[in-house]
Length: 72
Image (cartoon, rainbow, N blue to C red):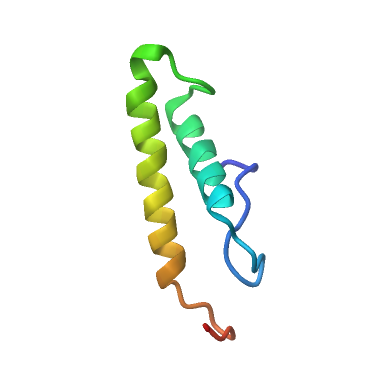
């Protein structure tokens, strides 16, 4: 879908930061909305969407079980 969003789970990467997750969320919202940067009247909705996707991604990554990996 969006080639600039990198995979954020092992074994593809072990060090995922909050910035990595937010950057992926931003790319997703940009792709879905069709806006690279929203107009001022859409900024609140755009930022709320980025926040929601960031939170959902953090929840997803925290609960995924990847075969063959050991969670600490």
